[in-house]
Image (tube, one colour):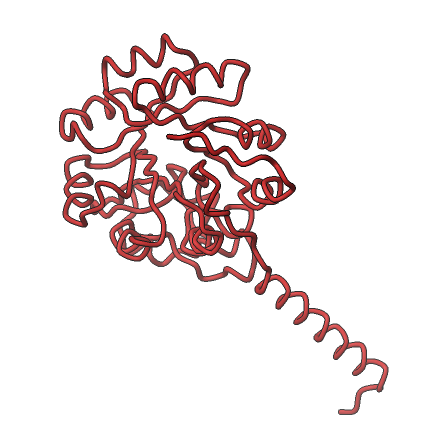
Length: 277
């Protein structure tokens, strides 16, 4: 069958443009964090603007940018395998349905956790935590937001992998926080606080290594208060409008979603915080 030359040219042009667009996406040059910038960057669910959240590609983008921590969410399958996924169900971020806790590891490993974000990530899997930690060790540190897990088994895993200094934990559930501190008095723990009174109570109960606060008018005072007591101050910045505020602060750490924008703002000539820590 013969096709009109105009149709053939149109097809070839579309193919070339499409390939060029994909290559541009694949070869996107990412900014890198300057070594002299003292604020450790913690990236929420990995570089979730560039790749599907809580996946290897999302973490790889962070590594390429020279970032300090990748935040991941931890849950457990029906057969007690640890997975990295935020939601209690797989519905939003995979092509499957159902609760993680009701699915076996075999069922979870069959799911596509990338196609929902972009067809370029089709076939990406929900990472198993044990393999993910082996892969990321030495490349970036890890912030574990533990949603549901056997804490004794999880702590033992971290200790066996000799990653005590490469991770810190947070629990949205008070009972889990208490259990974690009973099991592990020394592993790094992050507690949220909005003011010095809440921070003081957190120290009394949990002896945290990190206090997280939101960017607010009280932020600078709370940062100083924590640092005077040997506790790292991490600022959670869900609003990109506050990135400059953190760049100019004395924070030890920043927890954010858009590291590319933060680094771009940092590269605009914002003064580097060189205070001792």
